[in-house]
Amino acid sequence: MAANRKLLAVAAVACAAAVIGVTGCSSDGDKDPFDGMSADKIAEKASKASKDAGSYRMNGQMKQSGQSNDIEFTVAESGDCKGTMGSPKTGKAEFLSSGKFSYTKGDDKFWEAQGGGATAELLKGRWVKQANKGGKAVCNPDDMFSNKNLKKLKRGDDAEVGGAKAAVLTRKKGSETTTFYVALEGKPYFLKVANKGSEGLGNVTFSDYGKAVDVKAPPASEVVDPEKLASGS
Image 1: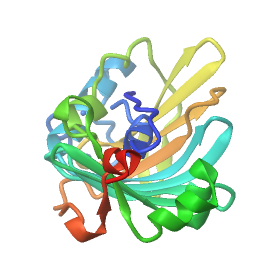
Image 2: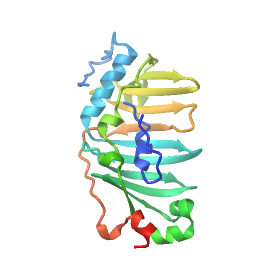
Image 3: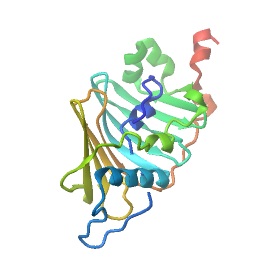
Image 4: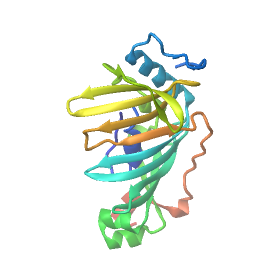
C-alpha cells in the first residue's frame, strides 16, 4: 500500500490503506465463484477488478503517529480525488487533488496543531496548495490497487461487509495481520481492508465502484501558495 506522509498530502495516507483488482465474477446462488482458486489468485482477481473500475469511495479510520483519524474519500478514474480526514483531537481537514496539484483546507484546530494560532488565523477558510510529487495524480489507481504485496495469503471463513458476502483473505507478516474482504457476488471488488498490529495502518471499506467522481481545483481567490507566504509575497 502506497503512502505519502507529507502534511499536505493526506490523501496518500488514506490511499495507503488500499493494496488491492480482473474481470467480473458472478454468483450463482450459494456457488463459490472462487472454488478451486488459491487465496493469492483470488486477490489477483480482486486487484484487477478494483483497478479496472476506475473510480470508488473509501471510508474508514487510519492511524498515523499514534493518532486515529477518520477518513472519507472519493477517487476519480484519472487519479484526482477529494475528501476529508481528521479527528476531534487534531481537527479536520478537507483534501483535494486535481491534476498536478493538491490542496488542503483545515479548520482552526487542524492548523493550530500544525503551526499555532497565527497560522490558523492566516489560513482560515483558505486552501493551501502543494505540487504533487513528480506531477502525478496522488490517488493513481495503478498505485492504489497494486497487487505486488498480495502474496502468501490464506483464505478463511467467508464473512459479510455491509450486508454483502465476502471471501476473507489474510496475510501475516511479523506482528502485523492484514485481512482483505473480496466480494463473492458481482465483480470481485475489494470491499474492505483491515490491519492489526501496526501503528501506521487502519481499516478501510470501499464502495461505489465505477460511479462518476467530479474533482475540480478550488477558485484561485481561495488558494494560498506556501512558497509565496514564506517569501512574504
